[in-house]
Length: 214
Ligand SMILES: C[S@@+](CC[C@H](N)C(=O)[O-])C[C@H]1O[C@@H](n2cnc3c(N)ncnc32)[C@H](O)[C@@H]1O
Image (cartoon, rainbow, N blue to C red; front, side, top):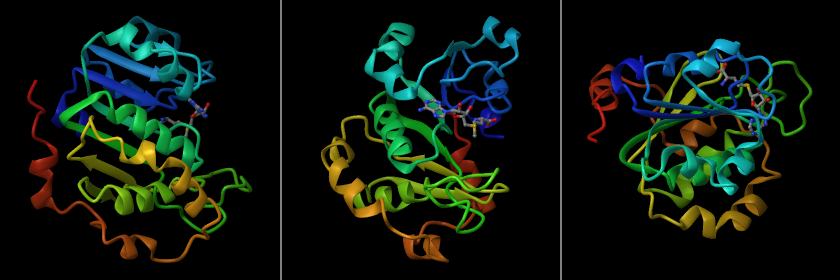
């Protein structure tokens, strides 16, 4: 739905796996997929996608985005790589630097289905890890962002808008955020504490679905 509504020209996904989400970016002018294990992606996706077999940290550190897109900016990003919150937060920081004011960033797996699946140590097949802590970090350090949560099964999707590519707040507080949140246990109802919207009411869909100005 978001791909249809937003019709991004520049799409970027961290953690592509077998391309189940990435395939929706086929219509984008530039569809960037990053995964350290690119073996599961159907080979034909290379005909239209720019696939990078590396970690997302390396992708940004080695200026692969700039090499691929020049001065263009990301319209829609989907963060779904390593499920430890510091990785997700770094992906968010790196992506936000490369967006414009109307871009949308999606973060997968922000609602763990139980304590085990929401733990840092992987003990289960289905594993959301502690990506949920990114929501706490964004809420605490970036009250300027517009955070919405879609109750997409099984583990939720955050929709982040109101992005500011000039913001350095998360980068500057990165060590402090990691120190504060790394050992935090998952408490039931943490989304209530965050006061984020629990799901996307119909009235808000039109806002989400307005095409970014380019
Ligand atoms: C949950 S899967 C992605 C699913 C995919 N986005 C989809 O919607 O079908 C997570 C993927 O992240 C990749 N991954 C793990 N750590 C990564 C990292 N540091 N950088 C990039 N990709 C990573 C894994 O290899 C795995 O394929």
